[in-house]
Length: 166
Image 1 (cartoon, rainbow, N blue to C red):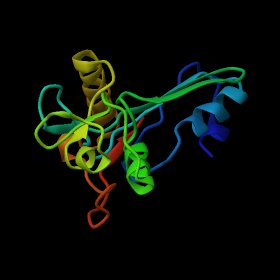
Image 2: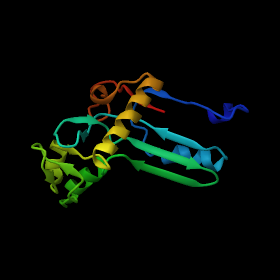
Image 3: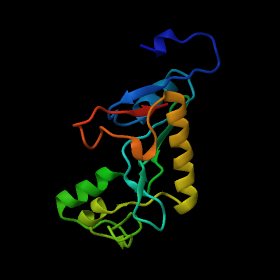
Image 4: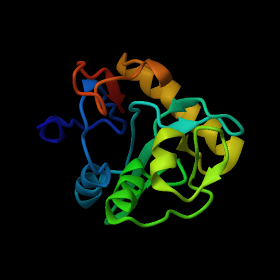
């Protein structure tokens, strides 16, 4: 619906506050790319990514997607993996690769159960963590959503969601 309202401007900004889980960001950037519109989309969610060298979960997996016409789409996380891949490995009784996550003591683990108690590592160590932090701050500032550890309502649906998308 918002796409139908586009004007002749070269720049558009759409943000969402108090969003729930919106799924695959590439869906949206792909649609825009197929219409000839370049786009970038990112958002935040409940924390599952730790500060490198600690067990403190501060940020979400920081999803980001970029669409470039006519059909180039990048859709990725700024974490070493998605939480869903760890949950899936646990369900299948499989190990996860070292480098994806830490246990509750901050030690790298290949056990999905321990990873879900501990936390996911950011892509690229401290540099990736800081890129994720700045995208989280940008998302929060533009959308008026909560930030970092204050984001709730996605994993624990007993609370209203207060995350943002940009």
